Length: 75
Image 1: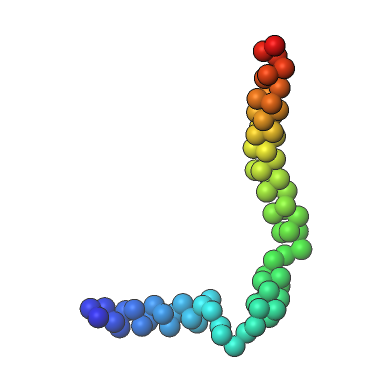
Image 2 (image 1 turned 135 degrees about the vertical axis):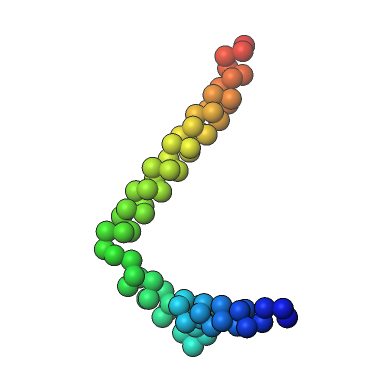
């Protein structure tokens, strides 16, 4: 390979900094993630998701209701 040394260094760096550790099982990885998330982060993520998703869902539901009621208005 042309840049084998660079590829090897990049793979070593990725493994050291945050690559997949095959010795850890799924529960240990989830526990590590929970430790990194601060106490208020979960509430902030839920609120931001609601701010993004709810307006789109409301618009889609309104459009479905309008198209569903359209035959009633055309009679």
